[in-house]
Image 1 (tube, rainbow, N blue to C red):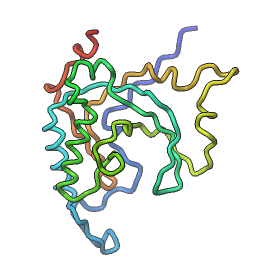
Image 2 (image 1 turned 90 degrees about the horizontal axis):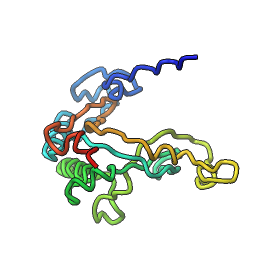
Image 3 (image 1 turned 45 degrees about the vertical axis):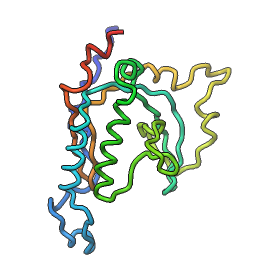
Length: 204
């Protein structure tokens, strides 16, 4: 019996959609927000982030998963299942150690946020710098109690293979930065002429 054809890939702009109500205005209208007015206009913030991303001079690159664990949000009752990610080893080896792509983009975006007096992302305790172990993909969340993560995701005699074993083989392309402001997501593409080409990534 011939295998069933795989589903076609989703269009790139699908990832820019956000499950929320449609914006009724593109300008700062306090009547739509119970009289509240934004401290920082949206257009200025987006321009700052876009400039920061382009200034990083980083082209598309690949990341790989390396951890799978539960994370309890410190500011809500939600518990997330998160996939820790990092640049693929080949990328880090070929790039300058001081130019790790995820960390470089984080520093640039944080500098833009700081210029507008906004909180910084993924900082180590005490604000000593970016936490390179904080990069992740959120897979799911729940309000229910989550058992011990090691017992749920670990090996045992009946299940010698964990969900992470196969996931570690993935190579996920990063082609841009998603900037979410309110319920609008904007894709800021990475410089295709910067960084490394796809061919160079896999010449090992």
